[in-house]
Amino acid sequence: MRKKSITVGGKKWIPSIQDWSWIISVLWMTAANFWHPFGLFGFVCMFTPIIIAISGRGKMHCARICPRGSLIGKIGAIVNFGLNRPKLYYKKWFRPLLWGVMMGSFAVMLILVVPRGIDALGFAVLIFMETATVLAIINGILFTPRQWCTICPMGFTSGNIRSFRQKLLRRNTKDVTA
Ligand code: SF4
Image 1 (spheres, rainbow, N blue to C red):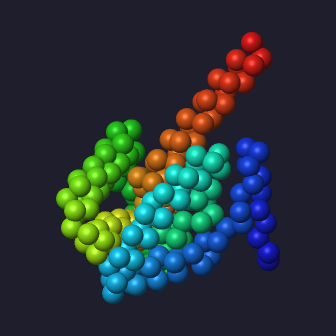
Image 2 (cartoon, rainbow, N blue to C red):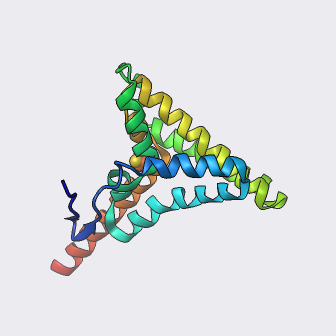
């Protein structure tokens, strides 16, 4: 069946490509292991959800595109223990903390690696993305396939951008109707 695009909040969402977008994850990580500068493609994976959220399409990237989300969905559908997710994941502070730890370590890594050139930078980005993918896969196997998506820093960022835009929109509407 042909997948349709839909309109969410007045913005068009593309049809889902998550049936096959996992291939992008596998291909780029494999290629980057052989040619480290290709690891810089990781920035595309990082900034795409942010740019899409800023464009007003909320979490369209998570729901329709994300290659990592697609990959963990596929693996989790094959092997999944279905355990209850840890209580820690329900804590309000856990997502911001994980976000801070991951983004903080990424920033420190950039500061240390940028002076060493493109090869080192590409490799560092690759290692960072591979670590996140391994964590996502482990979560997907132990709990539910897309468990990682409930704590993923990029999903957290795009969700916050969406909330911020919605607040701004509500405030502007109030100002206009006042
Ligand atoms: S939450 Fe993270 S891993 Fe999940 S779909 Fe969104 S960006 Fe991808």
